[in-house]
Length: 298
Image 1 (cartoon, rainbow, N blue to C red):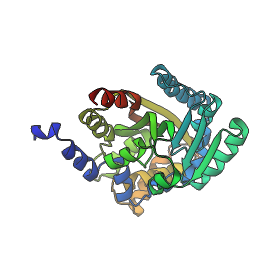
Image 2: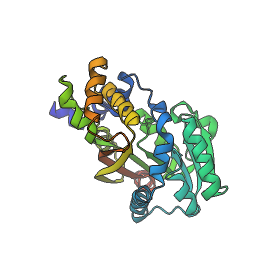
Image 3: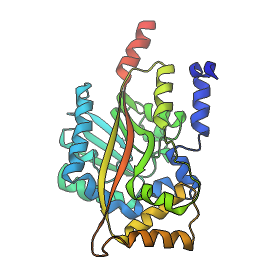
């Protein structure tokens, strides 16, 4: 209903119950979001610290700095830090970083990367942010910047409020802003001859609408970003099977045969090149502006 466009509680309920969000589609496919990267942590780490990965990181940090964020001397909470793709450059800019990460393979890589590049400027907290008692940790309003990039800790507005409560100046959140793209999956889906619907994964729509309705000051940006990955045949098969779970497609002998027959076109000694990505939204919430607004009202 049109009237619900201005009803923040309706938007909160819609986000909470939307089964097509990234986290919900993973859970319904039998994939635990906090464990989704366990098997590919090393590959993800290599991509993050490749020249292409570092350029992407610098673009995002540059955008934040253009909006007034100064990392020199700042306290930063990086939620879902992975192997430190952002924690490390934050620390290199002079920030004191608290990096939260639940995936043990990522934690080990983050420890190695921190020792190599960040010295004592990164404190690692192993665990899922959603399970952390922020009052007990003393994190309420404790950080100049809270940074959350494509992290399963953000599942609804309640989880956003928990993240916001840790920040005193800025909070950055990035989420999906449309369906994911994956060249190999797109090529294989028509061959499987099963009906399917691509999950919308439009969490950014809910976040931006609720920030508007609740009166937050923020800057936003939506971009289409793609990356190229090269996988071995076995790794490509496993990745396809994981994606099929998300699409709720049957995985049986026939499915395996179709996948393997399709991959036979590739020389077994060569890597399989995959283009993947999609549209992603980035929001920088300015809590200083928010507090000034309430001060003027008082």
